[in-house]
Image (tube, rainbow, N blue to C red; front, side, top):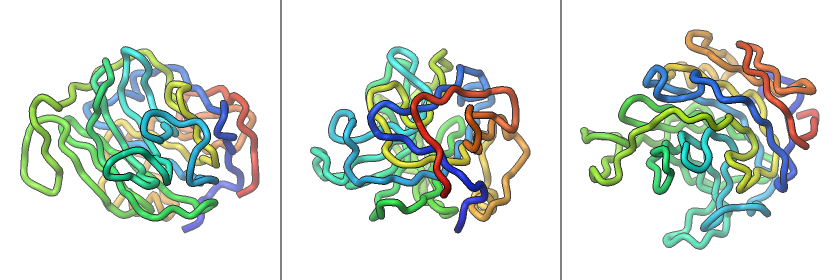
Length: 239
């Protein structure tokens, strides 16, 4: 499926990012529901500036003492056991960080190939979609029947709003995405599976849309509201 805008923002994997000031509309706790979507194009399989066992946070809201949520992509080569080659995840965290809970898919990635990713959270669960298709669901608080995975109570997450900005291309300047990102959108509700499929086809749900970054101008203009961002280092390219 082709994306709808004509340009993309390219990140060098070293120090490029977009920063958008904190807003309650970017936090799961505001309505108890959050959906975040983006097209990403990884231009390498192993990122040069990564964290921990070998992953980058390519978008998220949170930093020390005020963690909230994040998208993560692992290198092809990691020190995890078992390995997590190019796993893409969506996590929620307690404010103090540590081990979060989230959903993921782990499938072959082709350099230069666009991937549409949607992460969704409600008051108890996270889920993730790839190219319009549901992939995984996890319960970060409480227990219940499938398909969502359950975790022991000592792992449960209690999300809280923090004042950290929303960043694209990184989360907290500790790791950086190398590739292109476009059409970042945020809703203050959970998208239904049919809506995610329609979004992949280019039909953008307007109900609850609180931010819409097409990433086609010299600043990160929010075409859905007033949450404009500042671009640091990243450059434009035709997609």
